[in-house]
Length: 320
Image (tube, rainbow, N blue to C red; front, side):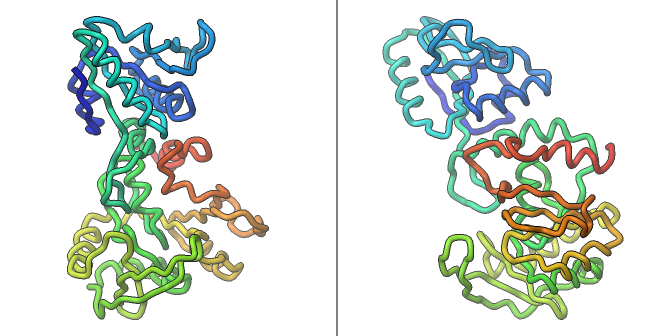
């Protein structure tokens, strides 16, 4: 019998069969790494592409499928590769050939903060482990683009910022940061649509926007016009206004030296995250600058830990 699920919490917490990680590649490595860090040591790997005996990953043996999937065996299997359909076909073949095989398979296909449709997302799976390893109070992240929402999504955390799937122009965002208590208490008004060219893929997009007093805010992705006011007010109430972290990203517009200098004067914790390759003057607020050269926060096919230690960064902000 084969069962499939994408309920990560149920898979790891409400079952006791031995865990097998299918795929000893990059994604499988990080799943195993996090399991070890969370004290889940009873697992092994299976990979059809294993060539030699004695291969290990994360210190765990890597088996061939036919060495494990035998009559009467029961396993929990985490399917880790991005190209997963051949594995599903192989599992189905074993189910037909091997009597009494009982497999509960975790397939990492999820909805995300930006996408209503389910798709493979290894980072959404890893969010379960990241959440367990965060020891600092989760801040209210205020960002000029979608990074705030992604951080909560990547750590399986409660949304506690109004800047979820929102976007600001540079001046509007800096004004918001400088007087955030006022703007959080504002009710979005004058809701309207606008069209713009997405500089990242060249497509023409249409989004909603509204005004908070004298600044304009874009409400993107899965926002509906009728939900804007309710969501803004709900998420603003959830904010921890004593634990604010401002994030300025260069993903949607170039950060001029003047923008960066003004942002650097904010009295609250603040970080500039650079996602684009380019020459940046490192003398401006260097200790609060993070250089990634990739926009990693919407990665779904590879672990963000290849580039950035999100858990370590959040924990560096203070202990719970």
